[in-house]
Image (tube, rainbow, N blue to C red; front, side, top):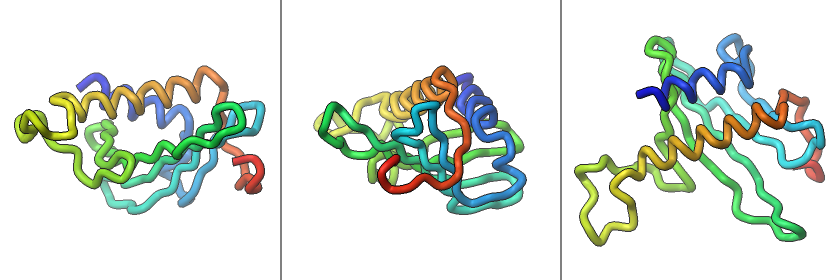
Length: 137
């Protein structure tokens, strides 16, 4: 459970005003490149459903964007990945058969990936920026 609580805390540090309003946020480091885009898909009293995307550039080659859909539970103060790279449902550990394309701990792995991304953003001083132009994203 520590991972879900820590991810919630880290996202709150990156965008402290997210609960107050706004439907789209761009986070970028001092170089202004490869911004993280956060789009609010749904707001409810106790939860917020968001989509987070991060483009990747390796040398001169663009790689597929990292795309996750996340649910924030404000009353419990936890954040969980519910969708990853177009997979609409990450199966629970007990649902995975041996020949399945998922690992037994797939849910934990994608939440650890989110944790690493949020830590990367904090270490590299990502801050909210105004909507970037197409050449910077």
